[in-house]
Length: 444
Image 1 (cartoon, rainbow, N blue to C red):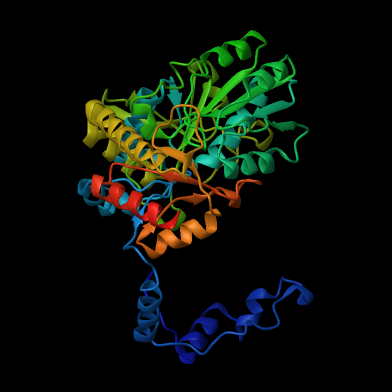
Image 2 (image 1 turned 120 degrees about the vertical axis):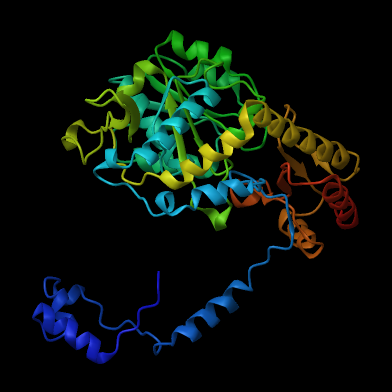
């Protein structure tokens, strides 16, 4: 936003124009006891001083270290064309016009996005993006409740991203529902406990593959058991992994959800990102958000339209599937460009490279006597290491050696003091990984 200074004379002219004497009159409808008494603000700065201060703050960011952090957000290569195309003004300045059909270019891009997501996930329908992966999962849980009427129970696998679990619990807290989080059993799903819980009171089971520890599995048989009692399977997955792993459709899951940051979007200190939500055709009317469809206009010309907009702005509140307003058009557009550039073969190669890099680093770390690989199941591009020292000390020492070594799991789990989640993407070279191993040997 441009810097727009206002002199006292400027302010008085604006006040005079709208017919009031003082800015405080703008807040006259707010009860006096609720108004701020003081904002305790510093004196105003000139434009030059503001930018100078921002530049000093920006220099505090350290981008020189090699990143092995993951846990939901990943450091991937982004082709230059993604920036060049997505930052064109006709895309970059468009938000969510209420006369959406006037934005045929944006709608066409989102239609292509939907087509690619369906192909990637094996699902038959998807919406035109959501806020992020966590809220997409919460909406998937609500979908399952709507579809499986009179059922009030959602089971969440403990291998799901713990932040996502909290979001689901928050979304469902004020509904007459029960959210059961399955206890952790090593790095995988406690199948025996899960199967004992599945009955005709369960609306849905949410799992993540690869899970938060990086471990992968085949949930086909669990999904079959769910379907036998009329319950739904909700699968969350890291999109890049779907280049080589079984998709939600191939496992016969009913709903797919995920976060699209890894598809051509930067880490950006945690955002912005976008959420992915896809499902089978028969559940499309329970899919929240907006769906872009294709039709012919009165002249027979192909055109794109928003269809099935089952949100509060378009239908009665009690009939809405969601109150979702934030549609991450631009982030979804970047994903569309990213997937278009890679193509089917390129996407598979990208997934394979992530897997191979992580496998190499995991093998090298396993050769260090004092380091143990926590994962007993196969992994994709993340895995957990157990150390002879606490994770905070390890991460701090690795940072001094030029690495963001991974996610300290004691920040999200109890009794995980010496475990770190390490993530490896296609950006990590053999040199990076070999130097990482040398640094670990020096510390432990």
